[in-house]
Length: 106
Length: 125
Image (cartoon, rainbow over the protein chains, first blue to last red):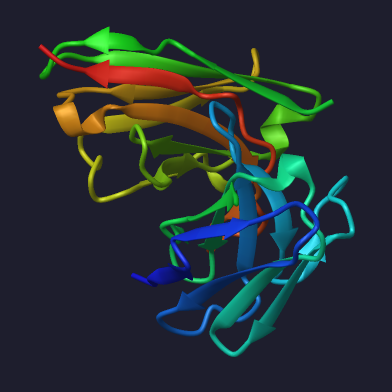
């Protein structure tokens, strides 16, 4: 099973700041990696797919990148509605998720 | 608008059964596979299983944690997928989500989007 390890577990930032969330895969997943945002009491929402493509309706401040088995989700300038839990997910081999990064207001 | 709505959750005793429904609208239901995920309270996301479209035989795959206890089925005439959960355990307590996805005989070939709002299943005596 491919294990996805997200860091940090919690990230405390202020609106307007830049957020950088990481996800490391235990083996190659190629570009078969996505990022989801989940707010309390809501379902996950697809943000980024194929490592760096934004899903429909996702603002340009969200971007994804890949370096080998390391993936990064960047939010260029945090808006109040961006504070949530973010999960990375791979479907290269099986279906697994990272444990999540909680982005909280500082 | 593509929509998925789960229903059927509730409180159930260990060892009993429960059937969840996922009602779809806004897309050609028969063209897609349907996948179930779950999320225990305060924890992360776990894949439960999926069912392929009839084009690929409507076959199913399950996570090891539920294999032999859970069964996914579909009724394309009314755009509903089901998750039959038998021999429930306390560790099955979670919010259960359904999503649509494209699945071939070789596996998942699209991303899970959108997700339904979820339905809570609580297994407790």
